[in-house]
Amino acid sequence: VKLVESGGGSVQPGGSLRLTCAASENIIGYSMGWYRQAPGKQREPVAVVPNWESPTYDDSVKGRFFISRDNSKNSVYLQMTSLKPEDTAEYFCNSDRCGWNAGCYEFEWGQGTQVTVSS
Image (cartoon, rainbow, N blue to C red):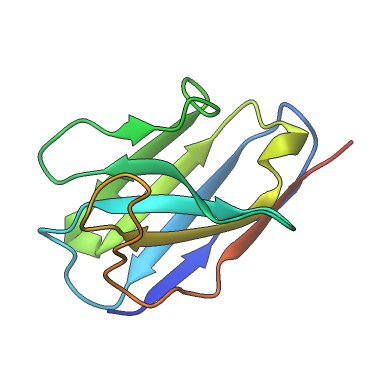
């Protein structure tokens, strides 16, 4: 499965963006997530949406980011609102079969999409 992320950009604090992750094959059965990596920092999970359970969010984005998926389109989305400068990072999607931040990624990483929040 190849993953292509899109929808990033430059916004002012308080702004919104919607990221899209398009998978080349069916993602039913995979718990899909969004991850981000800021310069000089490790990649970290932001949100995960299993097939049949409620999403999980990192505390830093709870109430501001919303993850969803459309299995019919092999796609996963991240609606980001009330963006903060600390949200600036490269954003990626993938599936971690071992759990939150366990590092057992199912697929090769895509190219990511850059999100920059600055006034």
